[in-house]
Image 1 (cartoon, one colour):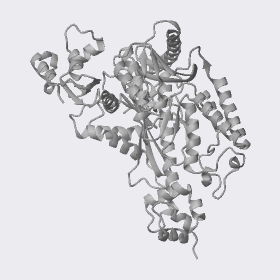
Image 2 (cartoon, helix red, strand yellow):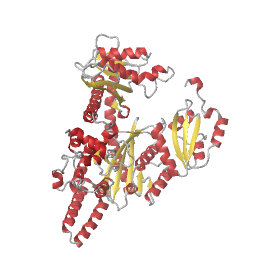
Image 3 (cartoon, helix red, strand yellow):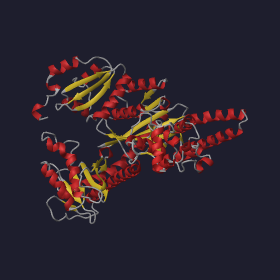
Image 4 (tube, helix red, strand yellow):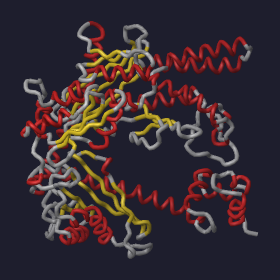
Length: 625
């Protein structure tokens, strides 16, 4: 949209502003603020929409500099009425994730912190540590993010030693369990020697450890041990006794005792710099510190608003038993009453939110803040190094500004087969994995035995920027999706093929593109026969090397995945009537083509979508007469 077509701000049209405010009802709901270009710049919630929205435009009302700046840009207001404040809170959180408004508090997806995932969507849930929180299946549960990856791995290791859990991601044998079953470390999940219901009960006990309910679990097991002993089931009682001893050792070794009563509480505090705010949340159960979670957010908002946003997102996916009865906050929350009411409804017990000013609770907040400050200092050191690298790179390439968004591209294949490409993105010198992309090369001339990296790179760049060439009115520079710099893995040939595509779409003037050759880490510019005079160890070149290495890693991993999938399906493709969906069903059930080959017709027919007739055809294919 051009500047001349923009809608003027409401503050410059008092009559239109008053008319719009009068239309907003005094009910709970969510409101949207849009600027002159019709972009959503702020999303909020309130118990009474009319009074909350009106407060942004009231003279004399105390507003932060950020909110005052936002109010000057508002050209339109929209709202959605909800039945309750709880619905408004949930709707606001979902809309903020969807639209990412500039003036809202946006939490950063910091990949350095690990989560524990329990796949409750599966009959036999898996428990594993991951740094990627992907909410693909609603029933799956993520706990974290945890600040100490080593401690987290140790907790999971001890949990697997205490409880009989599946020890291997894939079965070692097709027709019998492995040695872990004989040692009592695994209940024989691979052979379904335990029912899904019984196994889920075991996993629920492990989940209590990550919910901070270890003492509650010990109390439950103690009661079960006493019942087993009274029933003269001494073997079961001894097993439970060992589990209790393991949990007590876990408590003794890895939790810090705090002087207090048995009230469950969370304490949250932050330390803010110019760009980021580091937030720490301590989970205290029965007077003991059982978990320390970490979050990162933009620092442009008020501290209370940042804490409110973190707590809302954290408790949104928490089970009711994980919600404490008391939440200690470093700063007053702007909507503490709404959050407390929502959490009270979910927990079924009153939840209190307070900002302590003295004695033990205030000292606890000071300890949390001190930890947040240490984390901020660590991030700032890393940020300083990245800033230095970007400054150096801008000087090397004579860029007008620091390269905020840098994209790197690489090709991976084996003599042309399964050719793929990667697009990786660094934001302010750090990997932004949410923006990574894969490409399957579609060029018909790129086949097994015939590779063409030049044509493959040209294809990928054409697909990435085609929409900007087709629509000249589409915003380029200043668009968050528009890179400040493109790096191609290769030399002059790869760079020339990309430059030709950008020239064809009239994009070369708005895009800076370079290539980085592998052998001597040489940087080539378009139209230049010689590389730039640089030192391979200077910060700007090292930044490009990190980008190049990440693009290569990402391309290779995708290529291996494609090659593995093709090898798995190559034999199955030859079976008449066995389409891609049924192939996936078979491989998901048997894990490999070798196991499918060994299966009987009856075993094959157990797979969803494989009837007796098709099962017999599959068996006959692998066992010709």
